[in-house]
Every structure is written in C-alpha cells, then in structure tokens.
Image 1 (cartoon, one colour):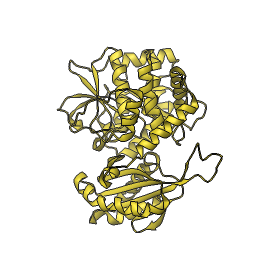
Image 2 (tube, one colour):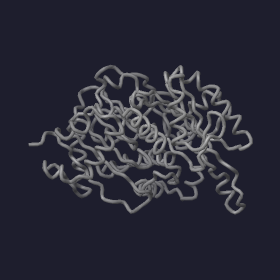
Image 3 (cartoon, rainbow, N blue to C red):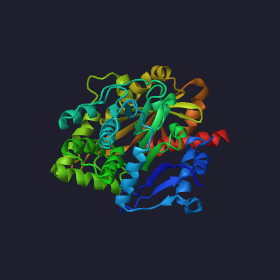
Image 4 (tube, rainbow, N blue to C red):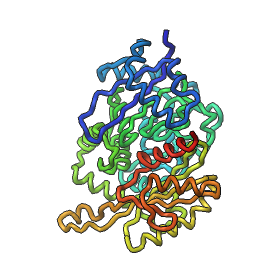
Length: 422
C-alpha cells in the first residue's frame, strides 16, 4: 500500500497557448525517495518531469488523480489543513534581494493561509528594490518586515525560490512546510518530506500560481489583494511579454484587471513605469546597481552569483560594463562566490515614429560580464563561450538574442558543470 504522499503540482506552460487541464499527482513515499535522494538539481528536475509524464508509475500504485476544479480545491484545502502547522507562527518568505514577485507572492500566500485558518505571516529577507517600492506606493500596500535568519525548527513556506543560497539564514535547519515556486527545483527540494506541499509551475509568475490557488480554494480576492497579485504578475512577466508567460498568467492578468477596472492601456503604462523604476540607477553606487537584481546559486559544488541589469545608452555601455566589472571582485569576496556573471540587457531607441511613443526602446541583445577566482577562470570562460554568445570585449560576451537568467543561464551553467563532472 502506498504511504502518505507529497504533492507535486507540476505544469510546463507553452507561452499563451490554450491552457491544458492541470493534474495534481500524488507521488508515493517509495517514488519520492527515488526522486529526491542523492540527486543534483538538474537530475532531480529531469526525473520529476519524467515521472510526471509516466502514467504507468501512478497507475501501478493507484495514487494518480485527475479531478475537476471543485475537487482539486477541496483536495488542496485538505492537504494544507493536514500539514504540521504546530502552535507557532509559520513565516512565508521569498528570496534574498527580493523583487516584486518575491514580495507579493509571500504577502498573498500568507493571506491565503490565514484565510484557511493558519497562523502565517509574510516576511522579507533584505531590503526591497526600487520597482517594489514604486508599485507598493502606487497600489498602497505595506511591505512586510525583514527577517534575516531563523532558528532551527522554524516553520517556513518558501515562495519564488527553492535555493538555500537565496533563502533566509538557517533555512536548512528549518521545517519547510511548503514550496510555491515557478523555477526549476533547487537544493531545498531535497528537504521535502511526505508532509511537504510543493506547487511548482514553470510559468511567468509565482503570483499566478497563488491566484489560481485562491480560485481553487474558493477564497475571495478583494481589491487590495488583487493589486498585490497583479503587481507580481506584471513585474515577472513584463505585462505578459516575457517568453515564460503562459496562458495561466494571461488568465490571471485578465481576471485581475477586470476586477480592478483597469484598462489594458493603463496596465501597459503601469508596466512601463514599473520597468523604468526597476532600471532607475540614479544616486546608486555601482555595487548597489550590480546587487539590485542579484541571485546566488550553488551548482555542482560551484558557488555562483548572477546579476541582471539593463543599459539604455549605447554609446556608454562599454563604460558601464567596466564599472560593473570593477566591483565584481569585491562582491565575489563578500558573497563567497567562485564565479560571478553580470547579464546586461541592451536597449536601443525605437526608430519607428509610429510606435516610439508607446515603445521608446527596443531590446538589442544581452551582454554577459564574467569574473572568477583564479581556480575558476577557465571554467567561467568556457561556460560563457558555450552559452552566452560571442566575445564582445575582454571578459564580456554578447548574444543578439536576449538571455534569461531563469530559463537559459542557470540551465546552461548546470548542464556544463554536470558534463564536466562526468
């Protein structure tokens, strides 16, 4: 007989294609051990994907279920209510250097857990960026308080991440009740047990997943919460323009703007303003610019940091690259990183007068600046040459196609390091 299952809610979304019915798969304890024990992140990801595609495994144990929305909602609520909540507060928290999706997913999911009767409080690990500050003021919501570390045994719900390097200090000794995420599995997935709820959907925004769970749980989304969820979706999908944007993101976006009575044109304007705020470097040091959208990773034992920035003045981009490169040694030392990558997306003025007012800049590819300690210089260079385009200048590589940290850089780095280890 199959034992109590973990829940993996896995969905791979084609960009803005008709939404397929999502199944919730219950994976028995024996299968869980086969998935999670002794595997690196990429192997873990591949095996989960393979298992989710294999109906034979689920049929053999009799634990595969596919139900309508109402039954899925009841199953979700029953699963959440059965978790080991204890008597203390459970903290809901996104990743370090939190962006809008990390902040708003923690806020919205903590509110959903409270609506289901559980003592959940949202926190952030470090100060918010300018885009988050802008939309918080625009929509009138208060950002959660900071919590830099937790004691052993603290109950946590992680949103928008599953990497210990990106999480709160002490996370490895904490009790992880849930992971709600839209990235590939991280090392913290290896900590999940048969009592952990994991909802991972490889789509545009974590807030979209949470919007869907509000619907399934039949919990009312009031206008204040609608603004919080919409903020996260707009930021992480760039108003549904990013490659990872899915039909589910589109459904959430449409539902929320209709509820808030905001026109598509007004939403587009708001999205541009958010984008401008995220790239407003006025008054910031070069180090602050580098760290304004930065994430740590540990892949195959290599400690890696990846920053994501933008630059809009072509004539000064080389100077900007030199400024970022100049602060990378200091940051690598402080963050204890073996390799640093700084991705800078280029933008050129839109030459079309008919669309320039609506879209003043157009994307012009991605530049990747590399820095590594002596032991990893060759590795960093080989990764960049294999994945990040042609050499542009010393230590800088250029790709005419825009590079995504989530969907290209991390998978390519993982693939290279796994191949080198074999």
